[in-house]
Image (cartoon, rainbow, N blue to C red; front, side, top):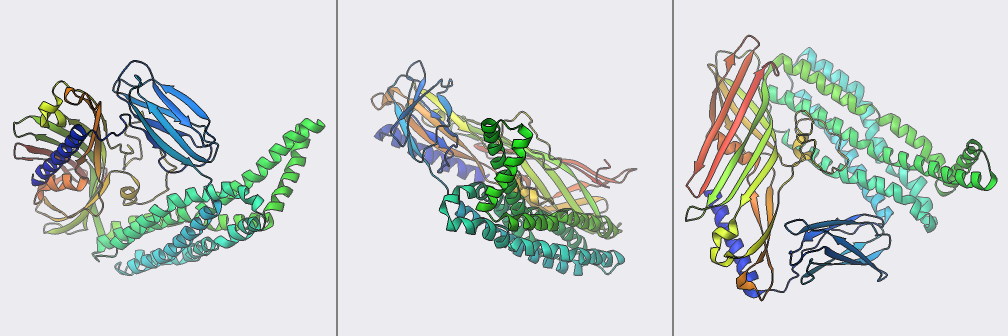
Length: 593
């Protein structure tokens, strides 16, 4: 428990220094905290959230005053929560420039302020960034295909391997064409859409929706591409038959994910161009119908023709339309082809040579820290769940069978209790009025196995999800997830497993904010202190539950083999204590128990 003790001492030192600095010096910082989200510059029309913590020095509302770039002022008043927490949304961001936000407490004695910027984003920058990402995805498509060729060579000589090679050779020209079309970003976007704008800057606003759509794609694509690069690098090691087959299965799933990314630019440009023509036509139809009393259908037909002509005047749609259709036809359906190849390998090659003992696991930890006097000051829990997948050679019974596998898991819930200031500094906090807010990590709350929300009532806002394939994908896409390899053997009906270092893991912490009104600091007014309390990772929980290794029984049933075991370990020195548990339910055939 040295890690727990070190963390406790470090946090105590930080909290002591922060509290002493605030109470002793009275550094004059605003007594009302103000945060703006998004924190970075926003585009005109974006709704921002203004939130923070205001000491309740009187009854009434928190007064918010927003000064716009033209010096005009907007007044917003909001009722604070019982702990002084306040939040309001502001959408009056049409003007470009700097916005100043001033917030006053209900009694008017304390204030805080912040600023945020509204700026026009240059659409050409977004398009150029998307072009660079498209080139990177195309290069990765080619290299991934080469990686798969190298992995397939490692398979044992068999009809299944020969058929796999034949199927891949048949699909190869389509995969290569997709990479070529993605590289031709210039022919899709630059020549027909961007180049005309360079000659007529007045047309630049017409590029904004395309720039925005391509920026959204690039934002999703880049981390997904980097994840695939890392996963492919990991898959190059080892040559054991079952592991080689598993890597090929995952490789085709990763390739399918790449092909999903490859279709992004085409979809973005196609939807925007179609919407541009349709919106131009609809607006003109309304004007024609109103001015000339055309029937709606007649006005719409005329408007669509004129609207398309207007669009062709701005953009060379004669180039765009056929290119979109060709590129869309080339890429459509390719992800499913790659997925089918992954399924073929899993069904034919893996089933012929290997066995799989797999199933869900659940677990977590409880940690508690106490002062030298034995008073608890910090307690937290973590809950995790996921899947343990073990692979070993078929037919090797009655002797030592080498096993390899991995935990794919996700932290699904974090809790926190703490009383650090009262326990650590009782004299400073005696008679003080304290307001406290703890911000906990919030998992995405999506089950890695089923894709279902673990808490359907959670009001979480998600970005548009990336389409991914493969078990390793979830580790990089879902927050607070981890990937821990294991190895061992099965001997005489006993499974021995040893944990290896996590190849991917999460970091999480709770942020605690105190507002303290103390008799000892009455002249200074309410004071702030804030600190973070870290949580342990999923790999750490597995490490503690495993210790130097585990030994569990593999029971034979009428349906197959089953491992049904719960691991429980308690560690601690009285001041820093942890309880760890992992429940395993593994089956062969998978799902039979």
